[in-house]
Image (cartoon, rainbow, N blue to C red; front, side, top):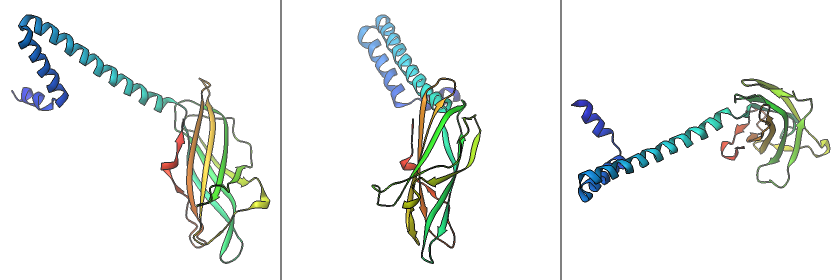
Length: 207
């Protein structure tokens, strides 16, 4: 009896609607024809529900099996200009593969601008050769990003903010599908503490 009561309590509003509609068919059309039609209708509902579950499972599988390069850490190194300001010397960035396939043909760059000055971006690139491939659970650590135009260095005063957007392009080594990961960070110049750049997850993007 307890198991029956628990089963009844576990039924959702949709389930009660289906059972109610089946009972209405049985009463309106007669028990024999009504029951046959009701069972056919319930079978279609169950099939549709199963298809929905399968589609959600497929989306989850695709999300977890695609190669997915992400950022493991970001640090900023300042070069002091005077007691109130400093310029960006370079960024140190680590990449990690959280997927189940190797990521190949990796290219990465960083676009940096002062907060509120999105139209004045500075391009930073890796000053060394990237590994050709990053295997699952692997990491490419301590990539140094330097400004491509040394004549236009970014200078910040104390408590001024910088936004850094890291753009990674790569392909699935096995399927040759192309993927992209973009992550943004907020860096604040504080000479006494030198805080780690803060992730901005709402601006992240990947395909």
